[in-house]
Image 1 (cartoon, rainbow, N blue to C red):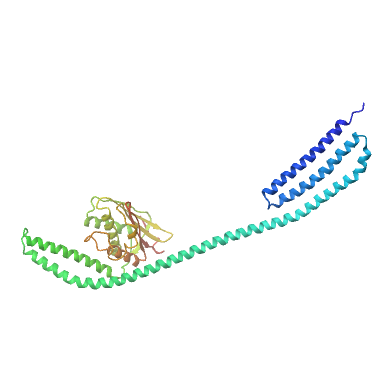
Image 2 (cartoon, one colour):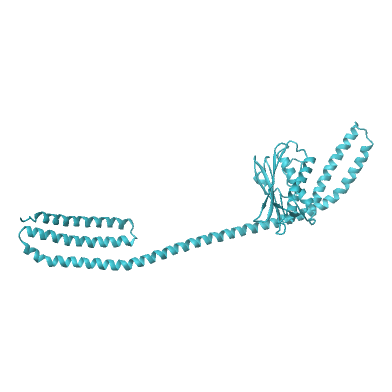
Length: 387
């Protein structure tokens, strides 16, 4: 029994046709990829390869189809004449594919090198940008520091000039005030308790004592004596200051909270002067809360900067932003006439600076203020920690 070969020939022809279709679909896909990433050399190579293989598929499959067609038509001699041409075309296309592969292999290595160089340039560009930003930041920080130093020097010169003037005025006023107080007290001894003259003399004495207090503030501001340093426990100094302030001021309705940090080192300071600073800050806080509010005293040790930080916070009205840069200026005050001389913070600021420290303030209107006293701690003091 002889099996007919027609089905086999049909399968061969259909397979050859499908090879042509698939090869052109590959070319179409390669064209789309090439358009989506025009700078990608891989897709360029794939497009060339697909075009060459599509040509090979047309030549090879077309030859198979013609061969089967001539065979079915009974003219195999015609295929014998075309076979050398089809073979030559196939060989030529395969040579092109091989040449394109070798060419793109070299191009691929060059492309990879260019890509690596571009990435290196991008990384270098980013590093230069980072260095430039860091340099700009350092320049800005240095400029800000110089401006701050210039302001401090100008402030110090202004304080020195005002101090000399205040000292001269205070000494000139102090002696007459002493005489007025002395003679007023002598006159009071001869007056009865319910006489109008005694009441008038008491008014004179009260205002003379007020002037005396202002003169003492002027003298304290003018004095620039060297601090008498001693190793002290800052918590003990704060406690003693609180006792003094609470006995001398009307603070019955003010709630005072203490948030003392543990392991605070002893510090070298002038006890009297630091107490004076704390008294001024506490009195300002008490005035801000108007005898009915909250004052919080917090301490901490900033080990990285080697300094103690003492916060005195209140929930009073706060300080307007326009006044924050002036609160340490001599004679500047927001209190009513007769309630303050404007020297308390200026004196406190000078004391903090004489200890190598500083006073900083943060305030929000309607929320309150926080004054922070900064006092440096030397390496030799850091070991004597206390609770």
